[in-house]
Length: 260
Picture (cartoon, rainbow, N blue to C red):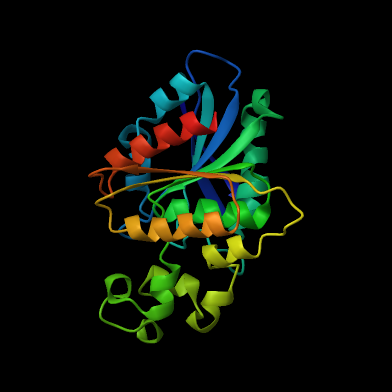
């Protein structure tokens, strides 16, 4: 069953639209998946967000695995990086789970998994590592572009160097300043992994990516970092897969199987 809701977020300082899907076959889901969407052609593009449940076949995911899925609509292509007045960490780790429990009291005490695809895959790992509130994290075709921004890779940055890009013209301004991005655990997901406290239990992380996705090698870089930092993980590549909803859907299905 699909439900659309809206509430005022104190951490994001705006009205937030959400889509929740519950399994049709049971009234007591065994777990919750918060799923973070990717970037849009233009910020605030709700029409694209509204198509996500059908594009990813999320109702079947809920029914087959007996889980509740909640998608928050984030109006910024910000890679889920927190900034002044826009606290993604607290919103996803505290406020959104509380709102979901308010709407569905039956999920209180159930495990909450944080996941996402593309930009949302980056955000899921970043926020999951920051907040330490999620035991399991799901990243599908994650857009791990932090190193590209540090070196000014034209494939990501276009023909301009990062310091010449107007702040209002690109998602890249959420990563600024580039001068300290390499050492910033607030914006750089690799640095966040490197600085995770040794005394705290590390979350398990599932990653997948299509072999024809331009982000494939960037996902391999993250896999190597997970190995070096001794995180429990699973990486599932899809031979011939591209950066599209077909590959995203397959990755989410495989990830949920692994997690549960």
